[in-house]
Length: 468
Image (tube, rainbow, N blue to C red; front, side):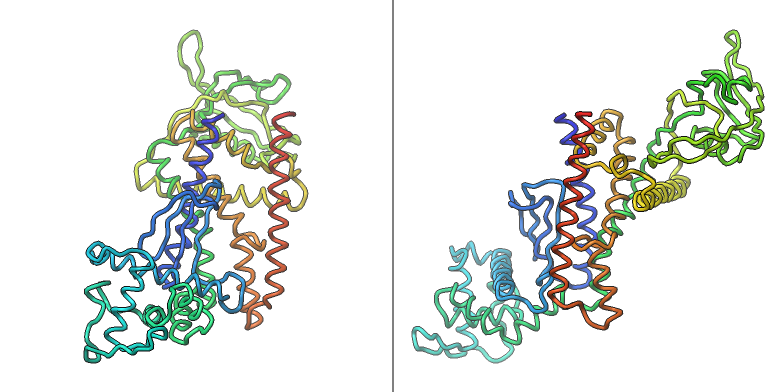
């Protein structure tokens, strides 16, 4: 059980990294400031800040998020958001001062270091100190470098706003409060340049779409690797032959290996099944290899499939042409050269995606019972644990399936999911303006309610499977 849980967490962690990396790289490419890249949800266990981003690990697994600058729903940044932005600017300055070695040389850290940097800045530009009642006199000509020895560059416009206020207001907390309350134009302008909500509609659409797209694109890439390493393929070897069915009447027996159907060579059970069902009841000439008195012989048998209603992989029933045989379960790896693996990987991923779309459609229309089709974290952990014991290829195939599901499900038009945000953007494009704040807040609450119900349903469904 521990193996299953660990396997599920690791698989989800990889796929979450892929998903969030999609958001992250597109956001960074378009100039949006990314505050945090988290695997897992709060509470935050630990993390490391690199550049403008905190890379964190949360205590709640099976999830993750990319937090960008700006309120997700609000029309204007809240005072708390501006205060948080100022805290980020403080960290930028400290990180820059650490890179130059100034922090170590000065022996200062944290707020004391920020105040020292601000005072140095004030000594060059001339700033009134409200508490000392004095004005520092500019001691360098305009355009001369000031903070380069300390932070390795000149302060950015928003950093300059912060440093000016820190230099003339004490304590530091009060300086931050005053800047957040006054909202200087230079600060707001820089904030809007880097904040997600103030980006153009096209940019916001691209950033949100990048997450599901990353999962969907990751699937064929992983599938190509599987084909290059060796895809486990069920061989067209008969396991059981039902008496009274066309296959038995035609002379098929267990252990027979099908090598061709109507002259078309096959090397997998999937190919054999597809040709039988696709024959629409017409006679099939099967080339078979079987052992006769210890010798391997090739024989031909003609069989006419029978139309019967059988259970499908989607959990419902529908008519299909069958001959009454099942596979033995024998497998062998199907290893392909790189170029062929690319084509097969894309095609196979397309088939899996089509199966997923059909399955979702059948659940929506009620043809497939949701209790049979949907599974939650418990079922995923069970499958993951089983696949881990089978080998890398099986684990990779499972990851391909889950990655496709994550990508497609996240595109559903449900608030809180990426698809819900994309729906908001489409509405904004049609209306020429965003939905009202109150309407967006209501939609988010409804989305949270629906997702909570869905999660409760799949977990209870998993438990009922265990005890049933």
